[in-house]
Image (cartoon, rainbow, N blue to C red; front, side, top):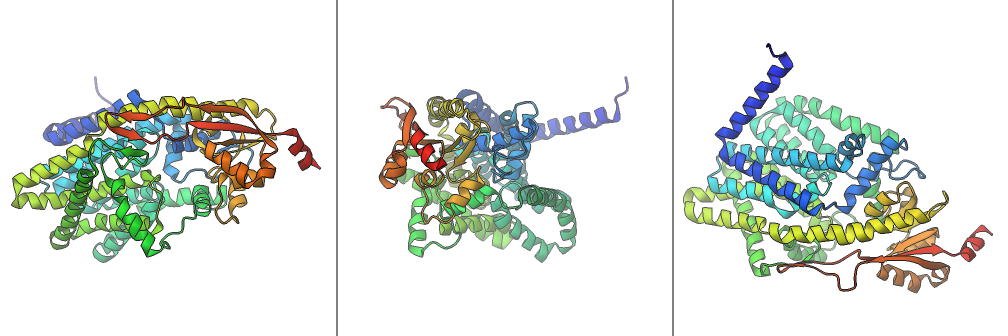
Length: 535
């Protein structure tokens, strides 16, 4: 039997992959670890990150015939920041499996991340300790696992960032161009901090390659941003506009005293256990966690110095990391936005791995102990964090957030009904295609316009301004509403409350998360307010 050319090609690729894995046992081991940790997270915890469902709701609406938007009653709204985060689930939603598509893409991206990081290490002559240091972080770190398997684009973005560095180092210009195109639709931070250093490096050292890179990147970039401009009226996502106005995010404008205070406290955003924003107690003392972060930073700085002497190309990822950290600290971005970090911290670890490898040439055993110890600290969270994530998914995400959304959906029977609420993910998914003016307006241009002229808008301001049929508020938000807008609040009544048991806590073997979103009240507009508004 003669195989077809396609079958022969697939067989050749398969044999090549098997041979690559056989010849590189380190690569094989860490790919297996990365896949295992993520599959366990998926099937054991079932955790879905809130923001993922905002994006997947828009993907679902494509196949429902309402367009790429969060709900059908408003003009088209780009309710997602990353274009690639919606393109993947659009394919999955053709089979009602948008979340599965994101998770499968994250599994594939984890393999790509490990592969390209390993190949970078080979190009740079990494010692074994450096390989273990970098690949353990990428395979086992809490945020690297959590967001990709929770339905976000984070793992795909990390793979794209690491691949871009590899293709630059190896001089694969067409592949670099395609990767840069993907980077431009993966995360907006890449447009600001990853692509400019690549462009500058090409301009300074590889002018002949610039055209090939641009021609390869442009179709991807132009296709999406041309579509977004035509479809939404602007290439800028509504999410960025909403956060900028409502949360008063203004890049590079914070006073230096505030920047310094934020910077000194931000060590936890890079530390094992504490890097997860909701964690408030770790099974390791802060002094040890600070020491781990300090070692990583020192290795990064050592890698920068060594790169300046021996490998200038490695200054490219170092520049991307420094640019992002400077932006983050001078803008004072809320640590809640922790999914911004993994791609840049991955690049930080690659540069730090180079520093560790250089140290290993002079002090092999101390460097090995140091690298393995730090790597172990970033993997140690696994038995501590996963039971907590399983509990959050069951007791809060499903039993509170999602149940609140389904309850709200059954109440909103009139097409004219509206609701103000936050967060949008699970509730918007459950109250599918209901008119929701969320705070801060991620899925609603009406909410953004309403809050645009308010000095420090909160959800109570949105309820007072829009007078929705329903308002879904946490206890503190309800108190704020009653205190600041008593006349409006007098015309709302509580019709349903969803909450966990009063003593609910999230603790496991010394690791603890803060409990949030465990109590929501659904308020309904009373007939007398409807009568007044109609007059």
